[in-house]
Image (cartoon, rainbow, N blue to C red; front, side, top):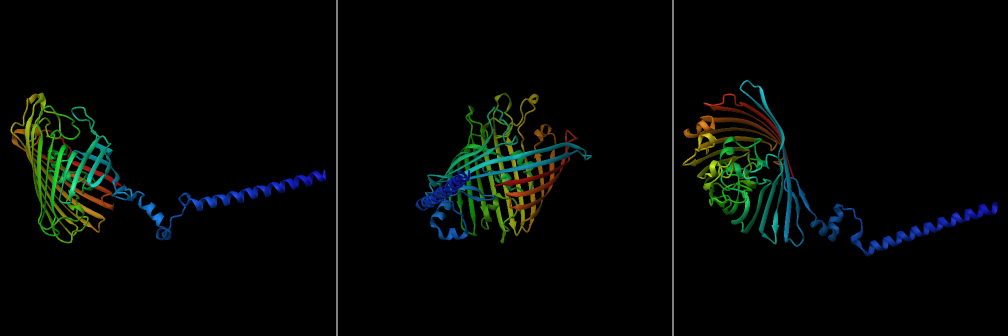
Length: 433
């Protein structure tokens, strides 16, 4: 029995030695393999390795670049294409009250949820832009039944910084407020004036010319020829199109960081900067009541619509001032009274001002007024609609991460429905990558 015990002990000792030898052999083999294949090694990235390891730096250079507010960018070493992905969302809650300050409506929704892709392919001169919307606010079905998810899908040829031409679907460059991204607003949303008269988007051909002369006089000319029925309409048997042209003057030089399409003076212009702009759009044989938007005209009717716009911007050391004037004209704005349909002939004026404190807190005041012409006032339901809005914004990471609140008061003179909402209070969180 004792001999048997010594034999078992000896066997266990030999087994341990064998396992240890196999383990050491495996470790040596793995180490040798790592030396032969440095790309398979697991490396710890440190500041020193970035300075000393050229191969690692090259690999990092081809990795996606991530920057808040500017998205995630993919760009290979060959640079034959680039892709920047961005998303943003706006979560909003709003309360509406009547003249007795009785709550009449509550809104609580993801108002906007957008996914965007930008970049170039084959050459930096061939640029593309795609934007999709996913909320009910963005994707409301069109009157012709088409889906409404695609907001932008356009390719530009950019031979030089001075000019470019594009083909596809994007914003029609008409008024400042509509061209201004909804992610870069001082208030929860754009004004009632813009809501009535803006041209939104369209499919067609677009062109821009930009004269840049440093701090001196600058100008931009923009134009488009589009289908005239708005985004995602698809096809039209009517034969009409929309022609739009816009001229922008910068007498004291351009704004910093595209400040002409970002509300407020977030960059803090050290010298006074001004924009004077005007635009006109002629929509031949429009089939929708607002041209590129709205319901379809009754009885397959069409109208020729003219839309006009004038913009003024001034920014200086955190102070910003805006004036927007716009309107629509139509020779025959009325249809069969039984249809209750009409083209809103009239004008609108929007004035707003703001001041930014230390790039953190901003206060803003806006006054907007709609003036329907006398023949359409019975259908519009008022003689004049005035809305005054006070807003506060707390910027955390610029326009990419901010918290906003505003309060509006509405007054409609000679209103057909006297029980309209007088007060609106809204709160919104904006987050974008």
